[in-house]
Image (cartoon, rainbow over the protein chains, first blue to last red):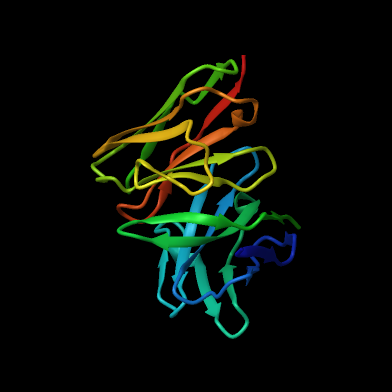
Length: 119
Length: 106
């Protein structure tokens, strides 16, 4: 079955850019939407944005100015860039397959990767 | 933005209990409401989509109902593995989650 794996640096300095990649295995990235979601320590879930395999995107309005999500179908991967990070961006970051069927829901999730913003 | 408010924020229950968690949207979201279960240190797991559709592989003791602004997740008979945090999520306008409901053992 489809599996997702997040990868990237676990430590990012304030004001720099956080970069993560999600690798999709066991299935094709085509014909689906793909989301990034984060969870600060001890807090709830926050949707960051999604990308369609064709490249169209939709972002959380509260993060839109700092977020870029991209897709590489040849590698079956999609990526997240979050710039100008602060300590408030410290979180576990999840990637998830997103189903669009009149509305959107996330049916397959990666295990998550912890990113700490600190100097 | 559509705000999602879950109640209660936490509750204690016993194995075998019937439990209901409520999620209220700040405006009508039709049936664009999903429920997830998250255990400590793990990724969320989809339980219910489109307000009342049971995700494949999820036990039938989980059920969802509602439309418009008010939704419920019901667990008909709590099992030990059901103690976790539950989140609702809307996608009527962008995507937002509720703050979560922590369910622990009484």
